[in-house]
Image 1 (cartoon, rainbow, N blue to C red):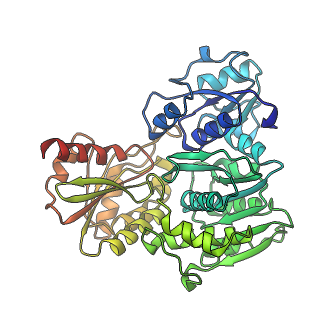
Image 2 (image 1 turned 180 degrees about the vertical axis):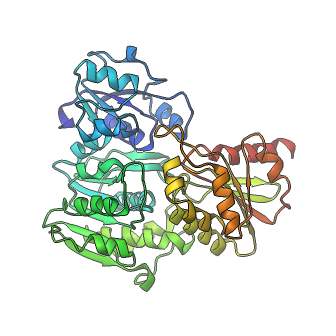
Length: 451
């Protein structure tokens, strides 16, 4: 779809981080944007309000009328898997607004199709991978901004340099965080692609590790013969994917282990050096001067919910991180050990989706056992899943099997558990893809109100 001719759009699931970024970009391009989502409050509520983008709290078929918008864009979370695979000819969607759009035969596209439409005719740069893609996308976007390239950028979290998770530029450069879930990135045909790392994920959609790798093979094959793929040579799965004979683009490998470039950032080298190195090589492929790249990376403020400092609780530093895959959890905990070698780590973790927790239970247990104390919240199913065959108790048992310290926690009990930690000796980390970050905010507020 060519969004240059669209004057109005309605986004179903507008509070999603990618959807919020898309909403900002469309509005700054002159499109009248509105939308809807659940009543649950996310950090994106404030972004939408700040940008004066109206939205409903709650879904209703009454919101859907032909005069509402020229095009309706839905988050993949509200398009049943069958609906996605059949290009909206029907399928297992229970969202009232999506159903109303389909019943009225109004124009409907997915978030990924909309982003793919924005990339058409531009210099598209897509950052994919099981982890590291948000930070890498943000780094590259800020580099291009500082290089006066005026890019459009769509990121899956808030970029602290911008206080927003999207940027609408006037140039042909468009940098996109490319999500593999439900094959979303197969709607993109970028001139440059970055592959950060590949670890099996999203078992609710990809039935096997092989099917997951196959999706990345198909994505890499979409980069044209005159394009470039920037790829992590230290990742065995990345190398395996790029052995496909269908790939025509030039492949440029980078190796974080070899440490080929001295890059200074505000963050622990593990895992941020690999992300910064990926952004560095992509920027060099775009002929950005090395001095500009390194200077930008040294002052880059980071992204929301990625090693983010929240405050303190009785002298113990509180951080927040979005990690929700075992590899991400392990990488973040290793980075914390590097950054705070004399502190103990208390981890408040909420697993994200039953299917992921069940499929990767043993990997989660090993990663979570790296903390000194772990407090496990009930599994958050989000809009994808309402129940499953695994529970927080199963994860706690598995952590203990690996020698880790783990107990069950929930909102009403976490403060009493945290109060047992000695002052000024711990780093407390909230972690997960849910709203677990609110716990850290509440702990900080409690300390402030009693001091």
